[in-house]
Image (cartoon, rainbow, N blue to C red; front, side, top):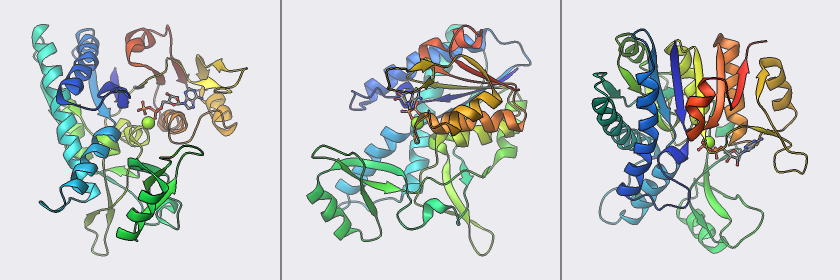
Length: 321
Ligand code: ADP
Ligand code: MG
């Protein structure tokens, strides 16, 4: 069995935390203890592949670029993405290796920096279609100031109420392919636990010479994780977030948890607008793509329910049909 796990934001930083190294290492430990437990139940032929988000870390790093710009040149968003792949890859790799060591398991762990191809013509790059908010929440005054300093930015009101309701918003194009996928596949085949496509991957487009070029965008990590699942031939795609199950009529009095469902039911619920864009929507969409490609099972659940969900006891489980 080949298992690809996509770790949500809370696997590395809890919403109420600031993101100190201590906090982040503590969360990584909780996450990788679990990964080590999963590995300890695996047979020699089984494989674990890990991907993760980077929203809070990239947000903090972008603030550092801005605050430090009079001392050191600010780096572009693609480079910030690469930096967070290294940062989070390191923390997950170290804590996972330590837990594997404690269990006497000698499985190598590698974190790779990798790019994900997007289409220059993706609708997210045009007009003010960009949908992914990044960086700090701003007041209306601060938003206007940022817009004056950077006329090329898209600054949007992202909350209906509140004083700090504005944020810089960047395109979130659909991932097409994982670049360097052959290398990742060979590592996985060789028995290495690979951490890849972090933060949805570094977004790149092809220039007029057919060369890769970084762009200012943020790819959804669940949709990019699904592309990675295809590359490594995953059987099971496990998305770990902060809710045990996806819900129908989310937030309404008739809210209802989704347990085991078929692909066609998942398609119907997604089309019915039950899952919000930018959070649960892309997760369910990623699961649907995975099963359409030929995956056997896609699961959405919380970090602490991962093992139970793999045993079919909880979580939203989507199977072909
Ligand atoms: P992650 O960092 O794990 O990707 P997200 O915040 O992007 O986390 O997605 C998880 C969130 O999706 C939940 O905390 C919940 O607020 C939201 N959500 C949106 N629609 C639904 C739904 N239909 N059922 C459950 N949660 C939903
Ligand atoms: Mg998310």
